[in-house]
Length: 219
Image (cartoon, rainbow, N blue to C red; front, side, top):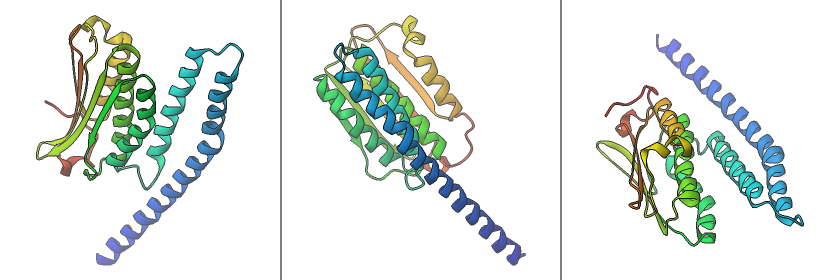
């Protein structure tokens, strides 16, 4: 029985190594081809005689999404939500500075590991919230605070912008955020009132459960 257990663990370890090798190969291919070409297109779009700001921003947004997906493939980072969020901050901080919007970012350096699929969903949800704040909120300040305690891992985002009514939710992709959170088993809460800003809250289960099944959480 012990021999079978050892053999099973060895097989699992070998499978994990093969998966990580494949992830590294895909990561290298994406970096060398798609990401590189998008970066060139961003630069070319800015250098044309009649720059299209909408096209440039669309290319930048696509490049950000691709980089987030690439980060999720990195075997060294794919369960480290703290590092993933730190990288997200590094990508967004110059964009907010360029728009003269203060970005206050408070994330603990050590957080419990989170299942890789959830890390990718978290990054995309937070990125979408940041994009909405930058494009639509007319905010002067955006705050992102990440904490964890006995109840779980919590991500709070807020802005001091103009807010919006519930009728505008689907039009800003917030319905997609809700579905993404539901698929990843993340509790998603959003509050917004015209002229009183917007608040987004993500809640994951107790740290001991973060690597388990992706079944939706319940409030």
